[in-house]
Amino acid sequence: MRRGVQVLQLPWVQRGIRAALAAGLAWQVALLLPPVLSDYAYYAPLGAIIAVSPTVADSASAAWRTVLAIVLGFALAVGVFELTRAVPNALTIALIVALAIGVEQWRLLREQASWVSFAAVLMITVGTSDPAEYALRYAGLTLLGAAVGVLVTTLLFPPLQLTTAVRRVARARELLAEHLDRIAGGLRTGQVPEPGEWAARTELLGRALDRMRSAEAQVERARRANPRAHRWQGTAGSIREQSRALDRVAVLVDDLTTLVVEFQPHRHGLDRVDGATGWVLADALEGLAGVVRIPYHATDAEPDERDAAIDAAVSALERLTTLLRTSQIADDEGFFALGAVTVGMHRSLRTLEAHVRFPAEA
Image (cartoon, rainbow, N blue to C red; front, side, top):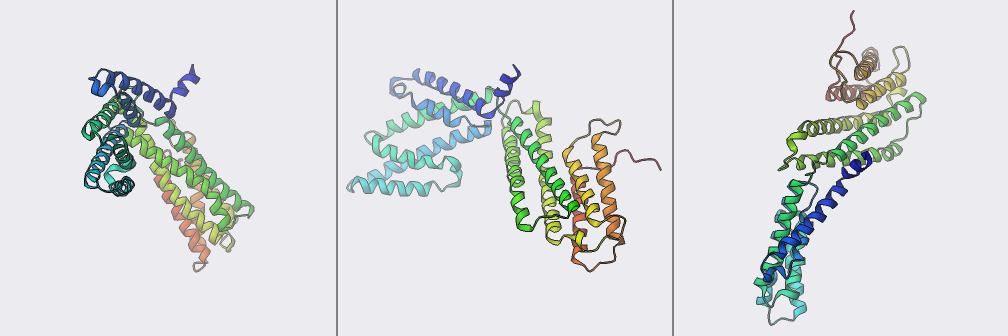
């Protein structure tokens, strides 16, 4: 039972169900129209499929932009055809396609722009005998099907893309924490990779962050004109907050990682407190990784795992700050790099809203 519910939560499964239902309904509705239209009912399912998009807003957008592109293509083809009757058909088609490609650059059409050239060629090849009637059949029935597609998308579990977004946020969070743990491990063993080698390692995290941003943007679009949006407002808001916080922290972490890898401040003789600089820096990075992994508190009444992670991170960062304040090598590039790393970690903890809630009694 649970497996079946999980399958139904997959975006492509939901879209498949909506598209199938919309296509069938569009066909049946088209058959009820007068013969001049019902004889070409197969255009309606085409419009329905076009309009079934991942979100209600995307469905409505795809519907009207597609119909607009089709009408523009038809009008362009008829106009050029009438003006070039004495020209060989091959040249007429070539001119129509060239002009259609130009029209497709209109930003208003977006992803549906390619329908201009498709509709133009369709009109010039099969619709010139009666352009007005052909345009009514094709564009009219496509619009009808698109309307059915938008309606089905709105009423049949209108997607918010929450499951995908939650999964991608969690994946980006884990990879970011692993990224911090890996560089900390390298500091402990003295085997920090070269800049080129580390750049290759960050590609996986970069792709995960891109997918997270895309999923968060998809959730935001899905909330528009969605009758279920108010029910999941809290979850959608949480996804937005987590995604944007992780995005900001990832930028800071990328900067501090670059500083550690390129300048390797732990090898510049800055260890003026107990313990080598590399270990102090590694503790701070691991502390930040622990906070990244636990986004929320389990309770407001007593300390929890997130509090423990924050305490560890703050304590490690205080030791790192002490290391900087007691160092006497203020003109060394490693000193400046370590200072920038420390500032980056302070900013990361603020972005993650990691503050000590239950200070220990003196």
